[in-house]
Image (tube, rainbow, N blue to C red; front, side, top):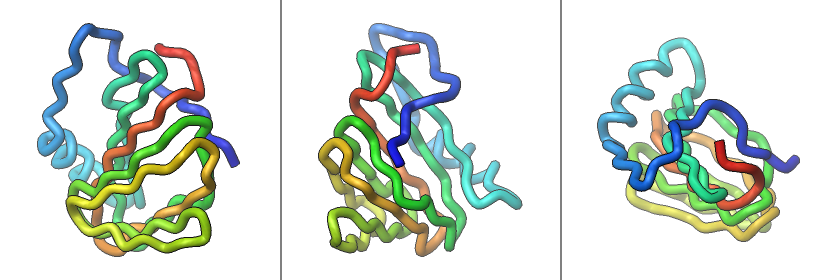
Length: 124
């Protein structure tokens, strides 16, 4: 399944200054009874920056994106499967995926990930 970026994004700007620890704290506080909370932090020239807080055990089923994707673990521990391989991603680790590579990830512990996706839609 290919994921096209959707949702509400901040207004275009020459510079986006993001306080990642504060955003992570805010999203983590919103997880509550849900398995996951996400926020579109910025989108410019076809590049999306999305933060996602995931409860332990939460899993994103297999999907792909039409552009390059990075998955960076800011907090916790995530297991990512892509291209027939499994990657253990503790805090501070990142993977980069080429366009259209199917992948899935699961939070082994309560986790916060920063996703960057290129291409796949118009700004806005």
